Image (cartoon, rainbow, N blue to C red; front, side, top):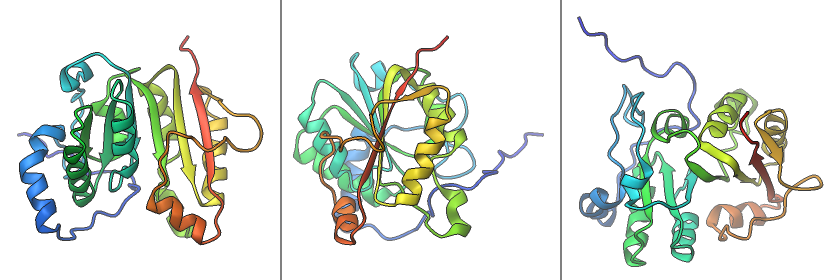
Length: 241
């Protein structure tokens, strides 16, 4: 008798909503997903990734190039801008909300962008099961859900366990970049990564300088308008023993 796959045994950093996509987004998904979205084997959940499903980046992108990954790409504004600006780099957008991925594909097609691919999946499972070890040059986490209520902080993405997964996929010397407009979360992320032996700070002082490769998005504008200071962090992956 074949056992049913186990559902997730830990909280995820998102709440999956079934909001209806617009007609344009539906068309984008039906017409462009085969070009942009990586088709991955699933586990029990719709955004899960089955173990032992690692991709070969050279096969997916059709070349050998540095790989930058953005977790929680939202509408795709930051990563589409980056991919258009740096055609020599391959980019992967990781997002659980299909409407955001559809918008990303529309903008990518409009810009004739070929170095961008998308994964509709839970980020920790992308790091654990989809990306090979030491395959990523930069990993971006810009304005993750802060889950600012104390009863919800267990849902935050950046934890000790996540740091271990991030370190596994980053090459030696690779960079983990983070940004948030919630001070408590910024301090938690800094505490987690300062305590992770696989990383070292890539900044001096209390916070990193704003990453100039990050285009200004609606999330950043919203935080600034609310009077919240934007805090950046940058960590470099130490050499493996």
